[in-house]
Image (cartoon, rainbow, N blue to C red):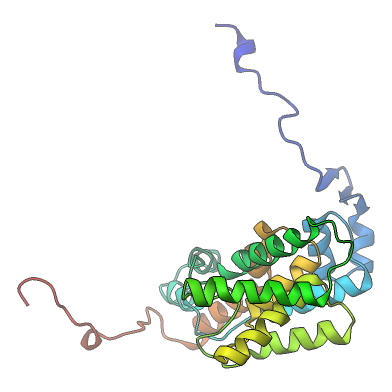
Length: 268
């Protein structure tokens, strides 16, 4: 058989993200030496994900988003998983991996779903040919969503309500900052309109996923990046919990004792 049949294409991997050469690294067209000196970490994340540097306002908003995701105590399954893996003596990367594998439909999955919801509804207004979206159109969308989810399906609207908080303090602060900085785009308007309606009818408020889904949508992020942004924000908190577990707690710690386990199988 000819050796040419096993030849590997020398240019089989293409990327527009970074170029690495001798003594030089270029990311999205910028020399990394310059980026190290001139921009914040959150700006670098924005550049990598969006392919351009953020404006001053965009950079502020994106930084707010990342900070708001940083930690939610030891309550989430991902954090508990990370601490449990760490207590077994596994290395840091294994414990972080355990946390990441705990993200799913019920935990960290809401942001992508909420971004898809907001963007599909706002896009439906854009298709009507109107240059601007007025508040009446936003209010009408909020009512339609309420009727679709609450009245017809008797189910939750993603991005609203929280197991621990009547009013998620992170969501409140994010909306306060968006309004203060004059960055209320159509997706944020829709989120606030839905919140007004839900609060009047059901005493339900925005949660951090609902607030950040609106901000990221106004910043032009694809919903498929929603979970990625959440992970970037949350990993520092997870690492802090892993380190605390290894420093302060006994090894091979159990989150329940044998007396807490009830056997209800055959032969009981």
